[in-house]
Figure 1 (spheres, helix red, strand yellow):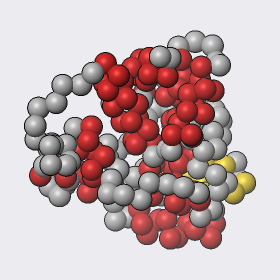
Figure 2 (cartoon, one colour):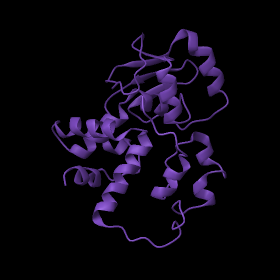
Figure 3 (cartoon, rainbow, N blue to C red):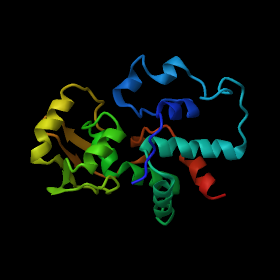
Length: 206
């Protein structure tokens, strides 16, 4: 499957904020934003006046890079949200949050979404007792996410070396047993991803 393999720190610098693409490194003094808080490239430190289109594109790219999706995957999620009733922007973020790789990350079982995606791809997690290796799998209220038996010790040793923030209130996780439960659907106030979803809706509605 195609994926971005370039330097992820440049993505954070391009949008001017931390996207936490490298896990715990982003919270340390080694973070690229801490060292060079300007756009990459020879004109990175020059003043930049963005057009209306560029502002919306930047917001869309910020969300896409945060969740680690390709454009086709990202657009498909937006199309699903636009066909749903209610606020399109809030529904869009809800669908992104319900991805299995994101849920594994939110539960604190991985230090970044990229690591969570890799572990899901390798079949280290199960949903309701059934192994799932599709990162885009959408969880539902009541689903139980757990490490498969053969991976439990490996994951536990990895988690012992890291500390993660508590899971959001729509999730309940236990790092000791590496199990988590989806208590409900994420509301907009539960999602701390720093994006303005209205600008993304306007970008795709142009």
